Length: 230
Image (cartoon, rainbow, N blue to C red; front, side, top):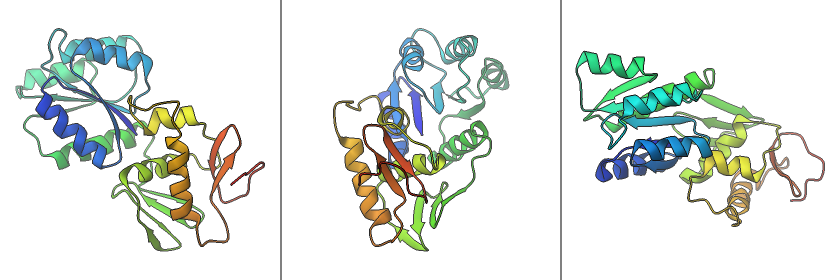
């Protein structure tokens, strides 16, 4: 899942982005409202974490403009202003949830998960493709009951595959959802990670689940696919 974090305080932005990335989320960071609006024009995000107190246009104004532009991405608003009127203004401006600073990072994660489930029509807590099982809360995976040890990015890629079983996923689409704005489209990093997943998920099993269609992308499927080249 790809997240836009809009936070002008570098220390807070670093802390939140680091924690989210360690839990398999791809995170872009914007330090002001104008940059945030531009980022939403050129990238797709699964959720926006938006601070209220921003230089120039504040979070309320940014959220209202996002909604006026037709952006339906869930917005979690962060603020140190805990007055009821402030919370009401945030929700009325189009925010989906509100979290008051200082906050426990575990609560932030829980609210992010809740918004993502709501946005994806109650995404199941457990994803299954054949004998492969993913727990979307703990970010763990197993095959045939045996734990598959994955890095955060490997898990993020495998979860994206599992959310779209049997569908051909191109490299551009994968990059948009699993990597952040620092992704180099000319690199072979996606191919490298897919090879790592093949080794961890398919090696030792008679039936491979991860398939490659030459020049097009990848498919996670229990069934064989045409033009599988690896």
